Image (cartoon, rainbow, N blue to C red):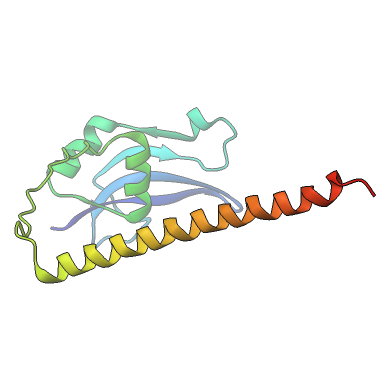
Length: 142
């Protein structure tokens, strides 16, 4: 038996309300269910009253292998039903020796950096010279 956690539509026309249910995947959406875990009313103004979930029962069903639908999984994430997975940093053994290609690339990058700094220094020098040239004619009396 494949157990799923999905939403069952209730409410009237243009005023949907959903029950979060656990059911067999072979049952229709609004058909027979195993258990009701909560209620989701997207139209309600108060965000606290919009959603009620029995978190412990939801965790129980997830541990027993029930698969939540995409929407229910999103709701569970927001409510903290899913327990966060510990972040494990994996070891990444890389190349420890310098290769000829790496050395060549570093050399090219170093050359580019020096040429760039030389161009920047030249531009500064030219700007200073232009300012001095512009200031000289103003100083001489006519």
